[in-house]
Image 1 (cartoon, helix red, strand yellow):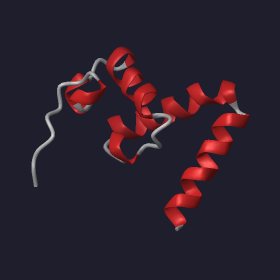
Image 2 (cartoon, one colour):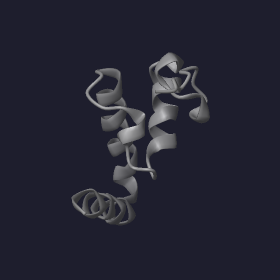
Image 3 (cartoon, one colour):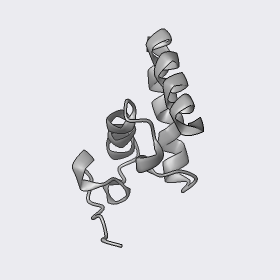
Image 4 (tube, rainbow, N blue to C red):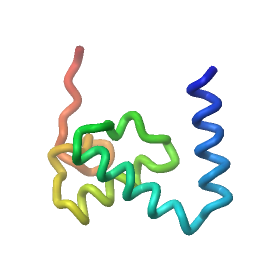
Length: 77
């Protein structure tokens, strides 16, 4: 339930702050590069943007899953 509330809050925030979406995407991209978060943990509305920032701005396709244009292969657990 807590996760659902957090996702709804992020969704509302993004709808209200259209200009801030780029900054939020950059924040999550930095966190991914620093290995503090994973693309899978990012809200679904930001995943593609975060992957694009990591790929185009940082030049690190090896940490992006293939579904978002990267080269990271999903491993079966």
